[in-house]
Structures are given as C-alpha cells and as structure tokens.
Image 1 (cartoon, helix red, strand yellow):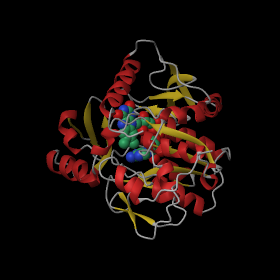
Image 2 (image 1 turned 180 degrees about the vertical axis):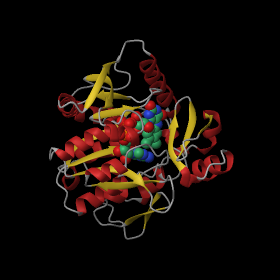
Image 3 (image 1 turned 60 degrees about the vertical axis):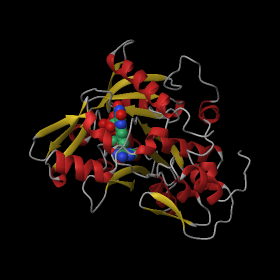
Image 4 (image 1 turned 90 degrees about the horizontal axis):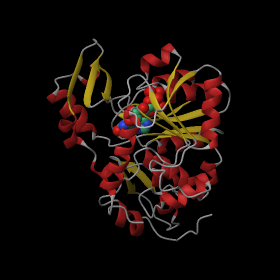
Length: 351
Ligand SMILES: Cc1cc2nc3c(=O)[nH]c(=O)nc-3n(C[C@H](O)[C@H](O)[C@H](O)COP(=O)(O)OP(=O)(O)OC[C@H]3O[C@@H](n4cnc5c(N)ncnc54)[C@H](O)[C@@H]3O)c2cc1C
C-alpha cells in the first residue's frame, strides 16, 4: 500500500514531468478519479479543478518511479546483479502454429496467439492492445479487443506511440472483468504502479500483462509523412507492414519491399523515450521482441502467471519453441540494447 502524498497535478506532473519527461502514456488521465484531465495532442491537459488527491503522480511512470520497489512487488525479491535484463523464469524463441496469425503478426505471433488462447479459454474477456486509427493510416491507436477478430486485426507493430491506458479506462467503463494488457515498458510500469497502489477499480480486473521490447518510438508526422511518404516515396495507405531488422523496412500491399538505414529514422524518434531506462519491459508477466529474428518472437517468461499461461498454450500445440543458446546473436543483442537504453536514460529520470 502506497502512502498518498496529497499533491496537485500542476505541482507534480505539470512541474517535473510535462516539460521534458512525459511520454504521453495517459496513465494520469486514466486514473484521475475526478476526471479533471483530458488527453490532447498526446499529452495530459488539466481541464477541470484539480483536487490535489495525488493519485496521478503516484501512477505516472516518470514521477518518482523506483523499478526496484516495483520489482519487489512483482517478483517478491530483488534482482541479482547478473539479471541484466530483469528477473525471469525461462527464455525461449517461439512462434505461432496458426497460419492465419503468421500472416498478420510482426514476428512470431506469440502475442496474438496468447491473447487468442486466453480469450477462447475464458481466461480473459477482453485484451487491451493497440489497433490502427480509423482516419490516419499506420497511426497506432489504443483498443479494447473483445473478439478473436479484433485481436487478429490488431496484430503487428505500429512504431508510433499508442496510449493503451485509455483503452484500460474504456474496458473498466464497459464492465470487463478479466483483462490482458499489451503495452510498451513505460505502460507496464504504470500498470504495476496501479496494482501496487492498489487502485482496485483497475487492478482487480487485470489478469496478465505482455510487454513489448522498445528501443524507441516515432512521431507520427516524422515517421509516416516525412520518412515513408516523402523520403521513401510510399503511399501510407499502401503499407502492409513496417519492420526494423538492422534497417527500417516497409512492405507494400503490392508486395514491394523498400528499406532505409536506421540512421535515417533517428531524426523522427520521439524524444521522451530517451528518458526511459527499460528496454525489455522488465516488469511484465511476459516480455517479447523481434531482436533481429525472422518469423520468431524472443520471449521472456518472467512471472509464474506468465509462464503458466505460455506453457498451457504451448502444451495445446498453439506455439512451437526453440531454446535460447548462451552467447547467441539475439541474446547478445538483448544485453546490448538493455545496456544502451539504461545508459542513455541515466540522470534523466528523477527518482
Ligand atoms: C513502439 C514499439 C517499438 C518496438 N521496438 C522493438 C525493438 O527495438 N526491438 C525488438 O526486438 N522489438 C521491438 N518491438 C517489439 C516487436 O515489434 C513485436 O511487438 C514483438 O516482437 C512481438 O511480436 P509478435 O509477432 O509476437 O506480436 P504480434 O502477434 O504481431 O502482436 C503485436 C501486439 O503489439 C501491439 N502493438 C502494436 N503496436 C503497438 C504500439 N505502438 N504500442 C503498444 N502495443 C502495440 C498489438 O496490438 C499486438 O497486440 C517494438 C514494438 C513496439 C510497439
């Protein structure tokens, strides 16, 4: 149970987070019990009278966030020095056995297959994911997926920021009882803060979390309008898939593939990500990434909940797995990207 410091939005997040640390995750907007925050142009805006309850600052992943404290809450122990990319029970390379999922997923389709399994078995009655904006092509948009069709429609990666917390709010408003939450490392941190607090309105409805690895995400205007449209000469409406595998690769609906060096994408990176020290969603039940693999998902089973769910799906023949060899390329890359992100964030987050 967290001791609640009665501090207003302006004095806490407005002063310390909004100027340069806010990623726009919308956690504060979601949890404000008085509904006095709105989400405008990717940022929280105070639109009503703040009652200085202090809840927004307690849940914000950028305000006085101690990963160690949250780790103790999630895993009931401190991490050992050798656990560089966080605490885990098992790591595997995995992929779906479902041909339909394989066609639409980003890497090995582990996320989509696990969500489908959980929905079909009645483990969850909804999944908080990221879909595509109705009006802007390729723009990530928070979504509550309530059917297998909606989970499949949301497969694949959008590299723009998706404030999935807003879909959490929607799910609670719609009376959902058991949810999966898919999100970036910063969002998983906010979810864990909600559980540790605990904000029961949200916490008791959460069944499991899947965190996606994240080096960076991009501004919509930069990635879609400047890079894809102007520099690569591709109509955003004709993009079938974007991927990062050593280069930024775009596949079109006509089957063409064009790519540019990662160096060319850097100027469109969303700056706030540089204040994040977590590459591999170290607090999630299951963390997933591509790590240069082709058609497979690098999967970290961190908690007992995550491991049980994965093993159930595996034993039912929904997923196939390969072991991760010590010293292998993806493992080396994971350690390198973990260090890089932690190093880059040093000194930027007040804690
Ligand atoms: C912004 C971003 C940056 C990433 N950076 C890296 C990286 O640097 N290195 C790496 O190895 N992997 C990275 N990943 C993870 C990788 O792209 C895949 O999500 C992961 O490998 C799982 O693949 P899959 O085939 O199992 O997922 P799928 O079965 O295709 O499911 C993907 C899930 O991700 C959700 N999703 C899509 N876009 C977003 C978004 N913008 N925000 C939140 N959720 C979303 C979808 O709703 C879907 O549920 C990144 C993902 C995102 C979203």
